[in-house]
Length: 133
Image (tube, rainbow, N blue to C red; front, side, top):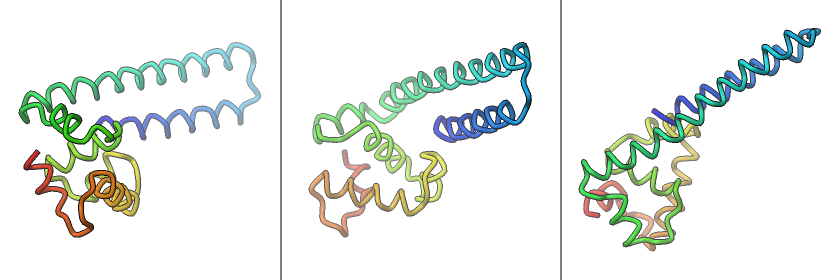
């Protein structure tokens, strides 16, 4: 949900900036537009903190899954950990794509790179492996 909201915020920021560019702004309207964009960015910063809260709660519900995963595979990046958490939740590739704000093909590529990074064969079922961690 965090990543879906982040994607929406970035789209909103882009639209706001485009609106500000289209106007013939007076100094006051420009200041108001900039303040609105800053408030949106501050909200986005709060969402980043929400991911940290999610990771803490996810670990408590799933018996320190992310901690064990980091210990077993120290080469995993934060994005790999997110993908692994979503795989552990048994989400579909399409659902993961929406959460990560990438294409389905991008998720498939991420899964491939994750298998390679973890030293797993190409036919390994990542969901089953994440359930065993």
